[in-house]
Image 1 (tube, helix red, strand yellow):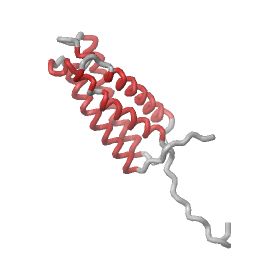
Image 2: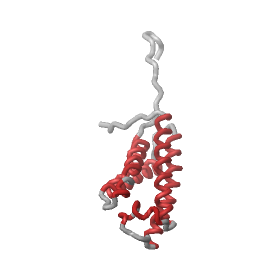
Image 3: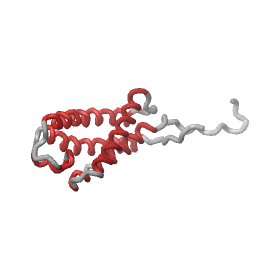
Image 4: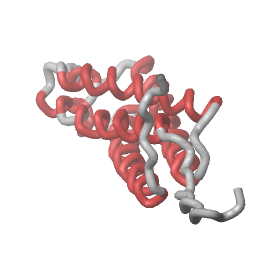
Length: 151
């Protein structure tokens, strides 16, 4: 039995890419600010328990900032393709789905009330990437042949 996978219209895929872009920009501001050591972001990252981030964490947040740019490019590539994602495109989207599901759970469990809000864009990213990764190839509706027409 085949798994049920959604067919998503191009306009819906573009809407998902816009959601991913918006959530990625929000995350880019947070992780980019953390990587640069800006103090306003400290209650919103790393459990909210630091007065200044250690260099290792700043490096991790810098790597996540690069990921935000790459995932936005991936989302637009997935959204503009008419065929179902395969190979590295599908694998990348599924890996990002898992990363953001874990991120949403960790943010929701954070001791910092302001960091808990980070679970919202993480959940949006996980769902959007899952929908883009799981979709089937678009098919065009075939009209039934008229009775008596040649096969």
